[in-house]
Length: 437
Image (cartoon, rainbow, N blue to C red; front, top):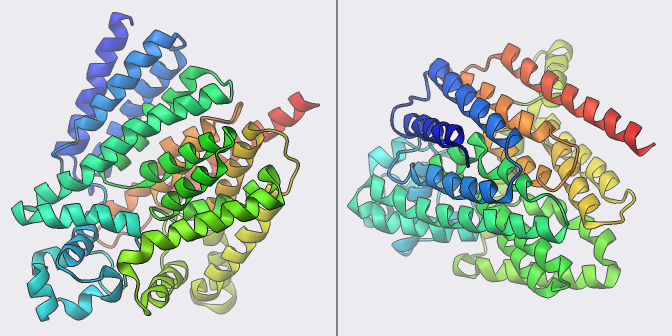
C-alpha cells in the first residue's frame, strides 16, 4: 500500500479520536466538518483501491478505527442509558419487559437493581416499556453487571460484543461476495464507511450485529443449509425486528415447501430466545411500545413530513396517530410488490431486499442515521447502485436537530438530504434500465 494511503489512514484515525473523545453532539458545525473530512478520505480510499492485498490491509486498519472507540462515551446517542437500565434489571432478577422506568424509579425494585436517579435522568423514553429484543437484552446484561464498576465499564462491556461482531460481519460479507462472484473490494464500502464506524462502534447501535446474522443466514442458504440459516435469521430478529421485513423474499427464492419449514424453524428459534423473559404480559408490553413508536416518534422523515404538512393545512393538527399506521400498511403492500417481482439469482434477491428497505425508510416516521447502515450493507452486494452510500453521508445532516435545546429539526437540511438521495436513486434507476435495454 502506498505511503499516501498510510498517511490518510492516520488522518482518518485522528478524526475518529475527535469523534470519540472531543465532540459534543450540540456542536453541529464540528460534527459536520468531521463527517465531511471522514467521507472525503473514505471516497478517496475506496475509489483508489482495487488490489486484493491493499484491500486486506485496509480491512485490518478499519478494525483499528473501531477499536479507537473502546473507552469512549457515546456522544451522538443516549440509548446506552436504557441498555444499562435494562441490563441492571435482568442481572438482578427482574424482567426488563415488565417495568416502565418512570413507575419503578422510586420503588424497592430500583434500589435492589441499583437503578440510580442519574441513570434514570439519562433515559430518553422513561415512560415506555423497553422494545429491545432478547439477544440485545442478554448483551445489555453484560453492561448491567459491569456497570457496578462505573458507567464506562458497563459501556465497554456492551461495546466489546459489537466489536467482535463487526470483525465477523466484515469476514462474512467478504465470504458472501466470493459466493456471489462479486468484486472483493466492495467490502470496503461497508468496512471503511464513517457512519458505520461512528454509529456502531462509537454509539453502540446493533445494526451491524443484526446484519452479521442476516449475512451468515444468506451465506448458509446459498450453501443449501436452510435449517441452520433459519436459526441465524431468528437471531437477527432477536437483535432487531427489521429482518422480519425480508422474510417474504425467501418464499420466491426457496419455494413454498422449504419456505414453510424455514419460517417454522425461524419462529421456534425466536421463541427460544424469549424463554428467559416469558411472561403473560410480555407480548402486550412489546407491542404497546411498538405501537407508540409508530404513532408518536418522528425524526428525519421524508414522505411522512410532506403528508403531515398537508394534514396541518386540512385539519390544523398533527395526524401522526392515524398516519403512522397507514404508512406502515402502505409499506407492507409496496414491499410485497417488490418481493414478488421476477427473481432469478441471489444478487437480485439482495437487490429486492435493498429496495424493500428503501421503501420502508422513505415511508417511515422516524429515520435515525444508523438506520441507513442496513442499506449500506445491502448495497455492497448490488452492482450499479450507490444511493445508499450517498445517503450514509447525507443523513448526518439530521444531527442538526441537536444543535438547539428544543431539538428542532432544520427542514431545509432534511430537504437537501432527501432531494439529493432520491435524485441520485432516480438517476441510477434510469441508468440501469437503459443498460438493461
